[in-house]
Length: 79
Image (cartoon, rainbow, N blue to C red; front, side, top):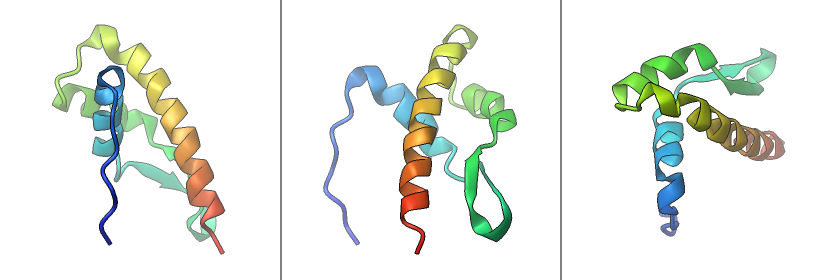
């Protein structure tokens, strides 16, 4: 299924890129319910993506916003 392209504002590109890189780093509770990102993996992702350490706090805050929105979508999609 092809989806239409979305515009990513330049100020948000880094957060979207890192969020995409964490797509396999989700924690799940019983019965496959998503709980959230595995935060202990974020330093590895930040380093692999070349994110400067001074940007980590800002990026973490931005990722948490995206994580919350993603959780809402994933939970609402459950039958």
